[in-house]
Image (tube, rainbow, N blue to C red):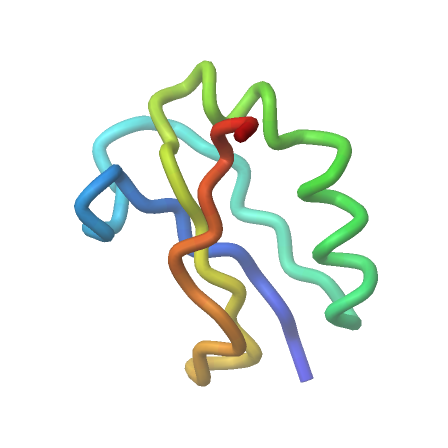
Length: 68
C-alpha cells in the first residue's frame, strides 16, 4: 500500500499548476501526521482541501485545510 495526498482547489479540482510536495507514505497514519505538520504551507500555496488516496482508491476527500 502507498498513501498520498491529492491537493484540491475549493471546487474539488486537482491543483496541478504549481510545484507542490509529492510525498508517498507507507501508512495512513504517516500521511495524516505529515499533513498535520504541513497543512499551513499547503494552504499558503493555494491548496484549499485534500483527498487521501491509497493507491488509486480514495479513502476520504474534501478535507478542508481552513481552520474552522
